Image (cartoon, rainbow, N blue to C red; front, top):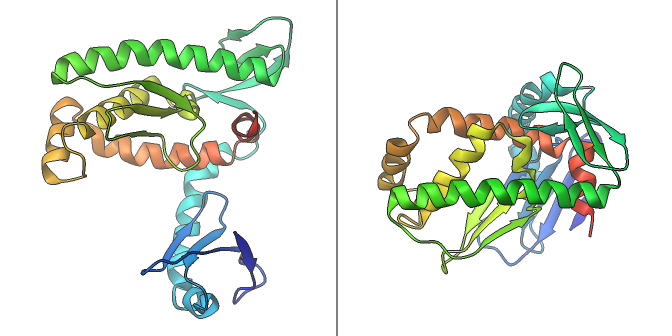
Length: 228
């Protein structure tokens, strides 16, 4: 990935040179602009042509993130923010001033993975029986671009950062991915089936966009993602 000069010194543009037929542009959660383009393509002119669109997208992202400014160093779990406190054992203390005790960041990541794995085991089993389908293995990873995905072998991969979401949204993600095992694409039939099992799916999709921005700007989740 290369960082190139853009039409404005204030516009941070990340350029990926790939042998693609169609140029792709994306405004990331931190406001940076990502462009995927072939060698020799004039990115600066392309950015100039899409300048108003970029400004609009940045404004939308800032609106999504406005309620969490100043909380970037707190751990978000289940849609709530917690202070991190080092201790000898892992513990989540609820309340107006919630606290998550942890021994090390690696141990915290392990504990969170265990929590999500236990929940997903129950949720995927319930909805797979309801849908009358079978799935393969369940993986938990720190995915960089998605909340979850499914493979052609019916394996399911879930983003550990799903724990930042309220439980109801995690449930929606499970329903969404399991239905992909029936309808692989986002076709009309897919959304009709999703709507039958999760009627509030349109609101859920909007909420997931908001939480994606929140998680991407959260320093704790960023550190956990980079831990090996």
